[in-house]
Image 1 (cartoon, rainbow, N blue to C red):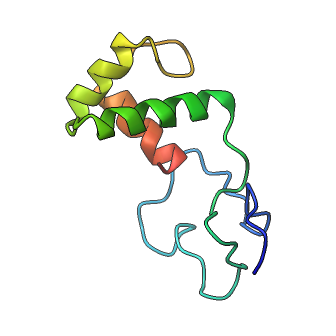
Image 2 (image 1 turned 60 degrees about the horizontal axis):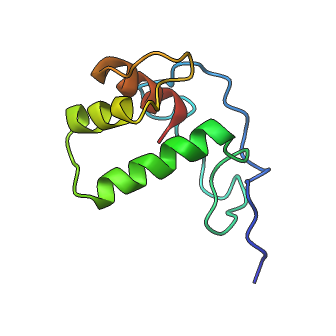
Length: 102
């Protein structure tokens, strides 16, 4: 069995700031065109900000929180704002998820 890696170095670079909304426009790889590394599909290790945000979201989901408004309210209460230091809004959080693919 292969060793699990932190990143998948075979993923093609995705330099689009806003992902394409049509299928086949950079969202889907042809089957067999990239090696499948067990448990990983990211092209780089998450940075400190992403790790903090992911951890906070996991805790919020585990506590039973389900709605977008509840999530962004809780993140803002924890002072876990967007990368620019602005409080989350429903719109800014949706855009973040679209760009970062979470």
